Length: 370
Image (tube, rainbow, N blue to C red; front, side, top):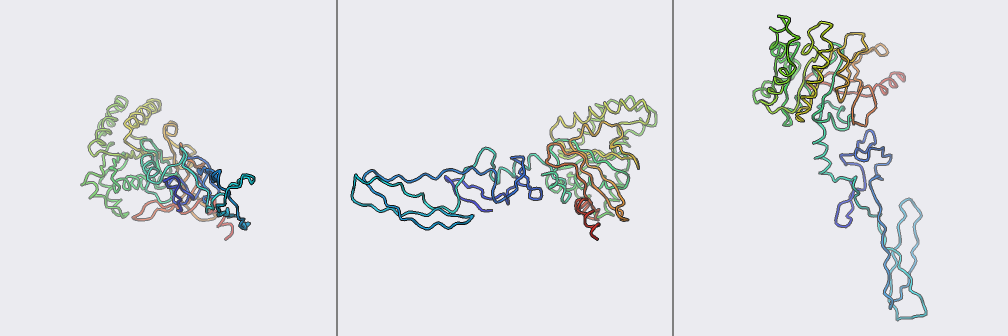
């Protein structure tokens, strides 16, 4: 990063190193536009170099210096010489002093490096998935809800735990609401995968709650429709408060609010709205809800309302491409992020989690050439 001093303030002459510049997309987060040439920032505002005016009693004679004709043409410096006053000869302004690059001043859209880091950290919660944060221009918006949907075995739980684990290791405690799988079985499976979370749980940086087990008696008595949404919301928020949680995962969302009867669908939709609004109202919890998509279905959620409540939707799937079975991540929706709907090939690596390999379009080009 090259910087010049202008009026005692550092000035950026390159986008390289600026945390508001997304290199892979050539995109400026602050100006919200493409930057085709990072070495010619759009935030620069050139200021005119003032010409030196000689005194009335002094005659200045300019000695021309050859100017090199190139992209980096420099202004030659004339050396003034004082001579006795001669009223009949008009004074000649001196040629401006030579500079390597026109100075510029920061405009209201330009942040310095430290301000940009603070702003990005305040706005985004990094997912912990290599490559995904760059695609989303920082990660998930803090305090918002995201939907991770996909068929069984596509990696929804792995992505959710990866999100919580990254936060716990960086000072952001996380709460996992287990709906389908008992916590002890889940933790045993994660340990086999290469993630031993016992220390993080004992230090209260992670908490796992068996919510479905908590309501098992109500389900068995067929009194599900009498559960007040407020009661479940209070239980979730109370658990989050115990560890001062900043991240929340509900995996999966449907069984928590749905008893299975057709007439319960409208109830479930209202339940979801109330729950999401209550969680986001705290302003503290960045939330992932997972939703299982039946094989062969084009739906993103069970009730058709989750995707409208979520600020972002990530769909995980398995596709056969040229005879190869690959895992594919589809960025279906990313509110306020400069990313169009796109697909990426990803792997699930033991001890690491989800790792994005490359865009699907690049993968297809490579397979065609091969």
